Image: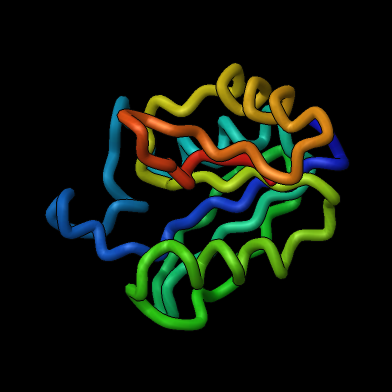
Length: 137
């Protein structure tokens, strides 16, 4: 775990493709949010969860301090949540993570951080399109 790295986990989406509350959805007996936080806590000393206004989150045990900030505009897409999360972090480096990637691994997060190497941002691409989550800044 690195104290100079924060992880911003976006959790405020509707979960319409999942048919309901995506942070409470379970894979392998654990919620999607708990899985994302576990991966993030393995590499980041600061954890920030961005939730929708009024969204209820269940308690999570993490080895790093956890703060919850509210998305300034409910269900407006990831950009307002990204901005709110980045505004809340104290660390100089941040990982931006979705809460709905159940197989996110610390190995991938470490690779994103390694790719920064002086760059202002690491934004993965797939099939020629930028993929903002997960990314590093």
